[in-house]
Length: 254
Image 1: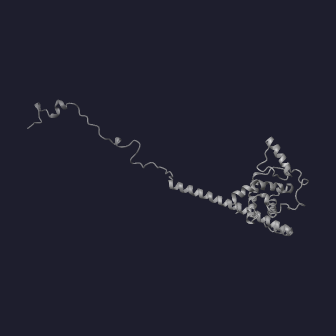
Image 2: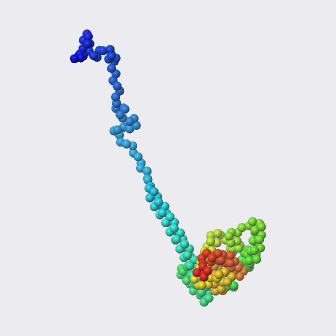
């Protein structure tokens, strides 16, 4: 049997193979087991949650926004339609009142709060503006406007989209007023369709339809009376009615 004792009573630990000093191998320490950036006994840092929107939520929001825009567009169209109908009915009432001499009745209704515009002058020739009453108006006749237009083209002058329209002092008409005029005029044309008076071309308009349009527009916008024989309104209708009819009516006028 192998003996652990050697000569001189030396133990195996005194053997030259193990004569070096003992150095224990490094083991895991508390420092190595713990992250330098985190304390296991401290609560984790507070993180503020960030709002997260799913693709579904974003799509729903965009759809709702688009629906609101479409609804606003519908409401704006309805307001425009109601405004045109109001102007049309108002002009028809004034036309009827003038034909049966109801001026006093109209003034009475106005004093009681009924919405009736009495600022527009009568369409009778006795009360229409003239060169003498409005000397600053430039284009009393179509020839005067055409002469100006020829010079304006050469000189680069500009007076808006409807240059022959002007105020009482010859001033240019604001763009907002021009847009309102076009809307009211289109409403008048629609009423001609309802009355089966809409012509295929403006030159073929019956006298009844012509009287209605002039009454509607001149009472709504008195600036149209600042023209000899109402040429400004006729000129505007001739230049824009055909396009409106082509875009809104069929061959049978419906």
